[in-house]
Image (cartoon, rainbow over all chains, first blue to last red; front, side, top):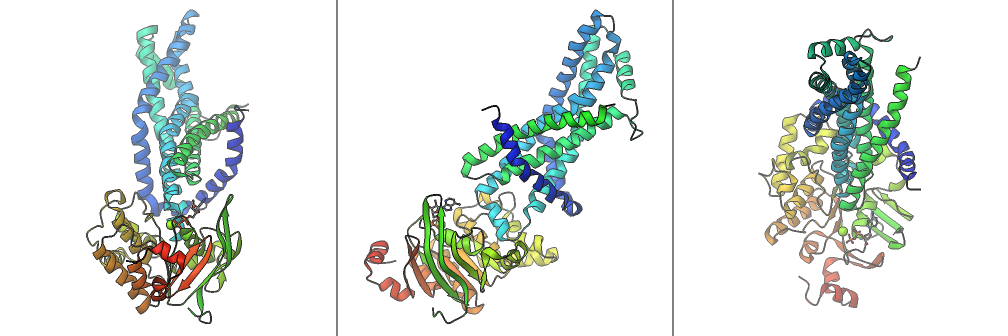
Length: 261
Length: 249
Ligand SMILES: Nc1ncnc2c1ncn2[C@@H]1O[C@H](COP(=O)(O)OP(=O)(O)O)[C@@H](O)[C@H]1O
Ligand SMILES: [Mg+2]
């Protein structure tokens, strides 16, 4: 039954998380007044993750290029390598990898920060002082990741495509110019809804949703933490686990909605 | 404290258990307006739990906790928040927001719940910091100050809105005798001059003598004795003699 336990946990927590998301949405008009807290949170989550995104993004691009490039070369189609790398980075790899990194670094520290406040009576203090903790603690974090995730995804996509190009030139004898031309060309295809490159905005929409998911699950885990340092550790672990599961499940449904037909 | 006077805080037959552990077991007492009732008792008997019931952080399993005649457990979220704005609460461990400076901790209720201009908020906060003898602590973070200082910041924060009802959880813990005496004088003055109603959890006899009008000894979840401090500390009740030692203070 061990395999089912995370699913059960998510099902139990889902109500709480949706309610928290609801109360964040109901307070969105307070964002301008909280701009400084939001900026602080964007800065912190970027600081925690940007170096990881750079390294992992580059290597993911290189891996995709190598894996598919070897097969393509076998049938003489290695010119297509730029197309494949840029599409898979923009649609899937960039948003997913970035969200996973955010879950591990930013979401976990949100759970730890808020969990620590919970077990040291700080949340009770806010309650007693009639201070709205959603406005003070949760709103800035959710808005921050909703903004930071797409920005970091653009970075991840970019370094991934560049890394793929390095492999294409050095391992597969595809010139960097040809690679980049086909990579950019592949992303030009406009979508039906917006006159923008569909694969780019589709991927960024995904990462926006993932950012919200990571922040809401991290904050919810922190708010429910109890029982001292042990409880904080538990909250941090479950935040990372639950948000990665939620990212993968949501990813399927968004992909289905964007690319069916 | 005569039961005929208007009771601001009243507990009637309050029961509370955590799992199998009975903490409050039929507890009843009243605090009239402008009075200060001290609660004494061994560690872990539920003194902090009582305060948490009065401010609505915990709900009794049975019995009624009322403030100004209204059952705290039955107030709507909005009503409870309005009531809390007129109450001050000093947590046992201070419960300062760890990422805000001392000054911003004290300012928090004003910043979040009022439209006072920044200069006015700064003036009020500085005034309270001076009252608790830490005028220069504004920019320090909670992690950088001692336990006794945290206590005093917590006290300044509890008093920043000039509450009519204050609940103190061991305000003297971690304070040296000199500061302790001046804090006790401050508490005394609050309810003598401003008619603040207070519940005070405290072990220090000197504090209770200075501040409280009556003392209640809590044991096994109910009131063992409730007397004015003079009589309480002179009592030859065997349990009190055992708890206080022969020569209190
Ligand atoms: N939220 C809680 N959950 C479980 N047990 C609690 C909780 N709060 C207090 N207790 C228990 O109730 C008892 C009384 O606690 P407390 O009121 O803090 O004691 P004290 O008289 O020292 O202030 C303790 O045994 C404590 O473990
Ligand atoms: Mg206590």
